[in-house]
Length: 375
Image (tube, rainbow, N blue to C red; front, side, top):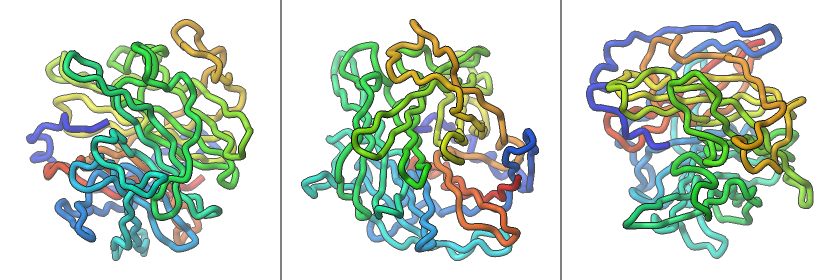
């Protein structure tokens, strides 16, 4: 979801914060996180005649020591695209960041997407085994007296240069063809992650479907998102799980102003374990509220045949545990939308990287945050 709701004064106050490190220690056996470094990609950066910004997804290709960045530009600045980049992690610092390439997303016939195609690219993953990229689009949902535009969300399999090969089947619950059914505008597919040697793919929607309940608000109650598990082998079935989305973190000012919470990204730890990144914003607050949760799919009810969580609540929904609250860093936190594991650090621990989407807004930042993941 675009974060154009940031007011100018929010970013003018960023300089009031100090930088530092923080760690949190969740339950035994779960990951622990130590903040190491931040790198800011300068606003106004231009690479190969494209405007760099709107970076809403990140993935790491260990075989070539490069990173993929999805750009969520629908075609307003340049055609929809993704970048590759390389940087070093030296002495726990991000160094020598440089862009390597930019690839335009293309249809199966080789033509490029334009703004009137109403795609909304949000996240991407690289399949090194097949040398393919997978990216999700939120589609579009506009229904008013002046315009009606309904475009389903999609999960797209493309070659390494961005040309579409095929799309995965979308569950009927996510279709936007009927009023009051499917995702609301800007709340569809936002996160995805491979597991099981890229044989399974998880996809998450940002906010509750119409038929699953209301959008997250400040009231302390359950709001439901869905996480889809695809089997990438043809002919294999998929599953869905009910994920309990937290309420909006902060009360907005004024009280009736815009507020939101949703799943911004997911990352698989294994066959059944996921990290879930929730992003909350309330008008009048300085920072986004970013929280990282752990969930395990074992024992959770498969709801792929459940068309409404309002009418038929999941018997065994997913449970979650808070792993890290970015507010503990005491630094400006922008619109974090993607994360991935990076290379091993010098101490043998895994690195974890987060990227923020600046919405091509001069008063926002493209933050690249580096963490040490210990156990």
